[in-house]
Length: 50
Image 1 (tube, rainbow, N blue to C red):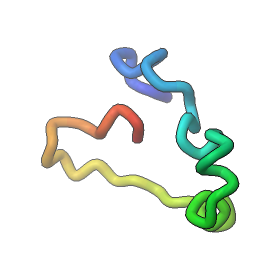
Image 2: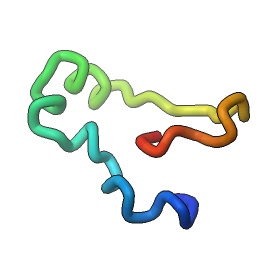
Image 3: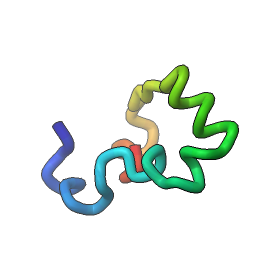
């Protein structure tokens, strides 16, 4: 679940669903082997797009 301050700012999967990205080599590679993210607390929270 997204934090309340992030809800509505970016649609879920906004980058991966973009047709220009989806059809690119990195987009196809990430679709085949998705990445995960870990917040280590160095910035004061995760970036809005993550």
